Amino acid sequence: MDPGSTVNGSRIVEDIHPCYELNDDTYMFSRNPSITCVLLYVFLGSLSVLTICGNLLVIASVAYFKQLHTPTNYLILSLAVADLLVGVVVFPFSMAFTVTSCLYHEDTFCKIRDGFDVILCTSSILNLCCISIDRYYAICQPLSYKTKISTQVTLSMILLSWSISVLIGIGIIVAGFSQGTCEEMCSVDVVVANTMGPVFSFYFPAVTMLCIYLKIFLVAQRQANSIHNSNPQSTKSTANRMERKATKTLAIVMGVFLLCLTPYFTCVVFQPLALEPPPLPVIETLNWLTLSNSMINPLIYAFFYGWFRSAFKVILSGKILRADLANSKLV
Image (tube, rainbow, N blue to C red; front, side, top):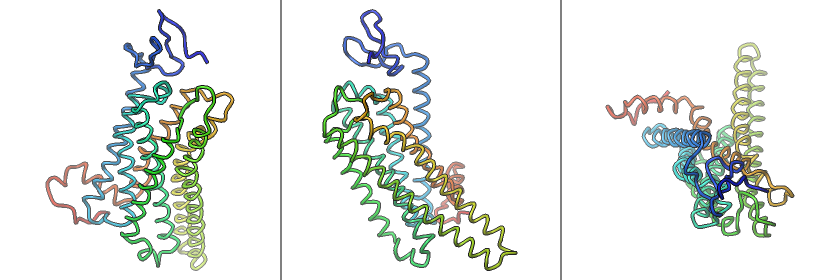
């Protein structure tokens, strides 16, 4: 594939990335970035800022308000920490040295960037999986929920999620994980890394979450039908609202998760086996779509709850700077 055209001895790789050029076989950031490049980085920078601010609000809320010191919210806190680090570390790394750039420079910087990318995104996914397990016991086994999902159990789940993420990240980077095309033919190690990595870091947690949320939906629907059958006249609207709310919540949770992550991980798995590799801009776009899930998570897992919205209002209004509101009751 011809990366671009030749201008005064320098090949401009406009069809690969609008911000980079090849000059004397060196892949570097363009000294005269185009308007497209500037707008691209303004957009990506905005995503990073939104990701950081949204997750900082979640972390501050759980840390400050004692009402939010619950096992469920500790899982949300762990998720917010992972997503915050994605915004602080992975976003700037990817903006400064993009996926396509690392195809030309397999150096230490690229391995560090890929390592943080894999570890933090995997941790975010596994934390989402832990939250689904927590919701399963809360809705499907409410009587035994407090004994089965205690603070100690939650902390163990968080520690396990982060440990697995680090191991997966180290493993597939050492094995030679490739986010882009291979020079000629992918080695067996790269194919294994590109297959086993997504299986453990995405597909297995995604299938687990899908099964758990399907079970939660069926139980919620059964509970709503039971309420309706016991008193059909006075509780019909209540049962319908419960069913609609359960359907809407689960559809948003799984829909956004799968929409953001499935395209990229599907591309990564089949890319080494493809006769014609996908265009590099497609790989970058899918990678950024995956990272954007860290920006959306606070909206789904925090803004859904009234007490988080109340906490955000108190923090953003600056009331916590004027009075001690840690023990205040959140709506």
